[in-house]
Image 1: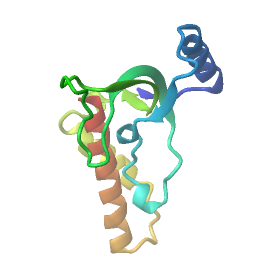
Image 2: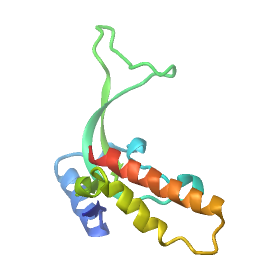
Image 3: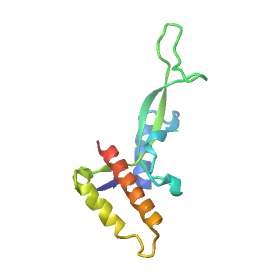
Image 4: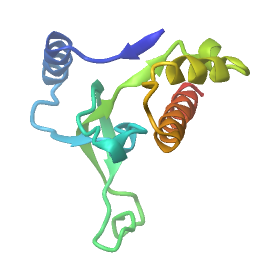
Length: 138
């Protein structure tokens, strides 16, 4: 169980491979959808990189529509895409009652002097995180 987060050496190796394949002059983009955390509202803003890959992506005009040639063919561009970390091995943890066990185990770490509102907020944050993990493993 755990996450797959790139190290500097792994990132260097992946980028070196892309350069060897002729992608050294391609633009680099970030797949923003893969960078999320359920506690972003609480200040979590530095998120791990999970991978780098080459993709052809659609070009979009100023109105948000896909760009096409005069003949109606879609216009794409070559780009290297950086995506966020992906979670592996969590299906058993998040299956059925195991989610409640996970939430209860995390709730035990809440300080005893916390108010009811703080406890409810913490439990809600853990529940959101469990749901986020469940979505990432499906």
